[in-house]
Image 1 (cartoon, rainbow, N blue to C red):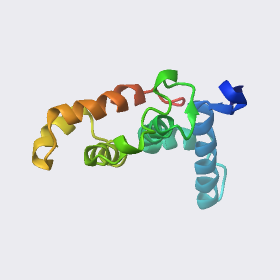
Image 2: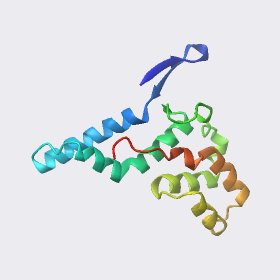
Image 3: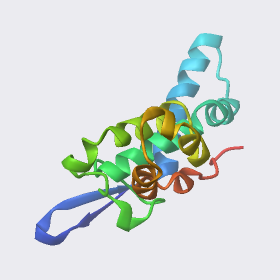
Image 4: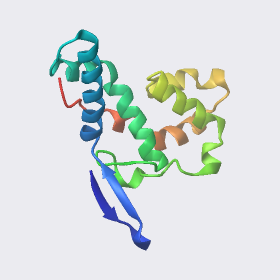
Length: 143
């Protein structure tokens, strides 16, 4: 974690995806160790990655795009790019964000289902270009 000063004297903390993941994996390790009655060790970190890494990265991508948490591994220019109230009110944005995070949809999924949900390809491209699904594909720290 690093803090920088922005224009106007505003402090901005830049988080590391690996550090945030380590905190979550440590909590998972503690819970698993409590459940088993002994220290399960580094296996818990690998298991956390297997179960949660992809969704964790997608949630952190949304945090970054909304401007709620700056993540070092994501592009500086995309920070806060979803923080436009008018853009966020568009039904296609809610449709895409929900399925991206909760259901793990990829770009192709959106295009296959867009028409049946009443969204044009143009609307979809507008949202997907901001979301940039591929930038949430980051290798896990523990394998």
